[in-house]
Each structure stands twice: as structure tokens, then as C-alpha cells.
Amino acid sequence: MTERLYLDHAATTPMLPAARSAFVDGMLKWANPSSPHAEGRAARAALEDARSRIAAALGWSHEVIFTSGATEAITIGLSGSSADATIVSATEHDAVHRAGAKGYFLSVGGEGQVAADALSGRLGALGAKQPIVAIQSANNETGVLQPLHQLGPIIRGAGGLLFADCSQSAAKLPLPDADMIAVSAHKLGGPPGVGALLVRSLDMLRPTGGQERGYRGGTENLPGVLGFAAAVEANRGWVERAKDLRAHLDGAIEAAGGEIVARGCPRIATIAGYRMPGIASATQLIQFDMAGIAVSAGSACSSGTIKGSPVLAAMGWDEIAANEVIRVSFGPDTSRADVYRFIEAWKRIKR
Ligand code: PLP
Image (cartoon, rainbow, N blue to C red; front, side, top):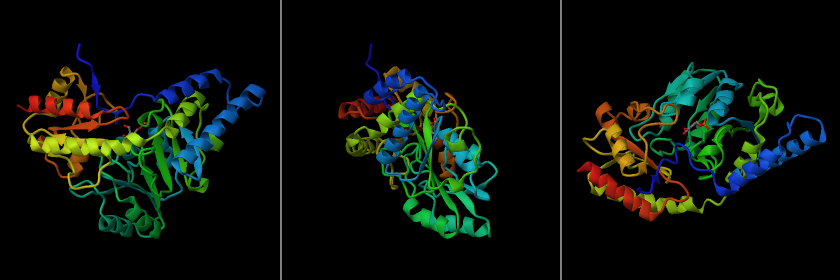
């Protein structure tokens, strides 16, 4: 049987060995961290220790609220914020669009980035309202990085808050200077079912739940949190190496007649979108799968089905071309040989 090659790490990535063993150790600390007895206090101490370690490893010196993943962090942050309006950029993950469904829309340019003047215009039209503005760091389909260092001060200057969904960039790139940040453990080598909302100050949130100092309800997932902490602390040297692999892959795909999504734009090294003209992404996925290679089309994480990409539509792609794009995403073990194998398969499928 052909050995499988997994190039869909943006959907989820295998747990790192350190995270796996921390998760298993966590299962032995089975007590409820809210219980006042000695077993509960030991679980609480482990939870609080993990909270500090995650903050330190991410370089965050403010509040950390544990959640069940980025989706819940987004929901708590956007629906529970003290702001009186919500603005959502066009290429956000579905979780952000749902949480900010009653908000205002912020368009992106052809390369997928929010332009400073579009943001200023949107903020100006709100008058005296103080909004929370959701702009992700790295896009989960294209890898496009938003210029948050430039956009953040514009939002703050208008009295607003910046909410940055960092699901695809946390522990790979430094966190942006934002007021709230969503992080997901299973995107960075931790277990699924755990994540965090990072908040600059609890004053920015309305309390809604029984745990996490009143900002999230539900018994804390201690094994998950311990696995999360171990994953965040793991060495990220591979992200630097991924830059070379991605540059090589970009060049080879272009030379073979493919198109790179957001070619001219800063992109995270771990995610790329490639168009194979004339071949639908659904067909490509089957062909790659038959060749032993797992990739994805559009955003596969919520449905398991393939549907048109709102991200590419927001960037002005027509439907036919957008439906010819697949996403390739790297993980810690992706090697040069893996990239060569993918390129050969890509050329065979295109023929
Ligand atoms: N935001 C982005 C950019 C994502 O890629 C994902 C996952 O696909 C999410 C949010 C949701 O993360 P989770 O699965 O932790 O809820």
C-alpha cells in the first residue's frame, strides 16, 4: 500500500508527542478543579500552572480563558464583548461570521488583505459607536497575513477593540498586538476540544458562565489544557524550514502551469492555495487521495463536504476558477521529499 502523505495540517494536525504524554498524565489528574478538597486543589494547581505556561510561551501577559476551542473563544469574545457594534472582515472563518452575524462587513482587496482606508471608512461610518473589529491574523485557506500592526492602531484610534483569530498562526508566529485573541490547541499540535480566549482586560467582557472566573461555563478540560500547554511550549524550528519548502513548492506549481492564490501577498509559510486550471478541486482531491495524499479544498473543517469558498469570492475570484483551488498545509514533519512527491502528483493530475 502507498504510504500516506498528510498535507492538511490546517484542518488539524497530529498531537505532538509531548502533548500526547501530557494529555495522558492529565487523565490521571481526574478531579474537578472547582472542588475544594485536596484532589480538586491539585487539579486546580495543575490548571493554573498550565495557564501561566501557555501565556508565557505565547508571550501574552494578560488574561487567558480556557474554552473548548477557537470557535467557542470567538463566540464568547464577539458576543460577550463590551463593544456596542461588531465589524467582521470578509475572509474570516465561518465561526467569526456566525458570532458577528449582526455586525458590519469589512471588505478585503484582491489579495485578501484589509486595506487601511477601507477600515477607516467603515469605522468613520459608525459615528460614536465603539466597535469590536474581527480581523484574523492568517487566513485558513490562503495563508494571507493581515497587516494587524497597521490596522490595530487605526481601530484603537477610533476607540474600538481588535479581535484577532489566531487559530492558524498561534505558536507559529508572534501574537499580534490585539485586545482579544482566539487560539485553538488542535491547530498547533495539542488535543482537539480545547483552546483559549486571550483578553487584554476582563473589563472588555461580560461574565456569562460559571467557571473561568465567570467568563465560561463548564468543567475545565484538564487533560486537554495540559496537552495544550505542552504543545505551545514545543520547539517551532520547523516553521522556519517550512518557508523554504513553500517557496520551492510555489515555484514548481507556477512552472507547471498552476496559479498561486495571493501570490504577491505576505502569507504564513504553513498554508498555500493552488489553482489547477481546468480541473475541479473535488476531482483533484479524489485524485490526490488515490495517490495517497491528503489535501483539502476550501475550508473543510466544519462540514466534511466541499462547497464554494467565500474567502476566494470575497477576493474577487470567479466561481469556476475558485472551484479549481486546493489548499496544501504543512506540519512539523513535512519534508522536502514530501513536497517533491506532491509536485509529481500535481503534474500527473494536471495532464
Ligand atoms: N478560525 C480559524 C481560522 C480556523 O481555521 C478554525 C478551524 O478550522 C477555527 C477558527 C475553529 O477552530 P476550532 O476547531 O478550535 O473551533
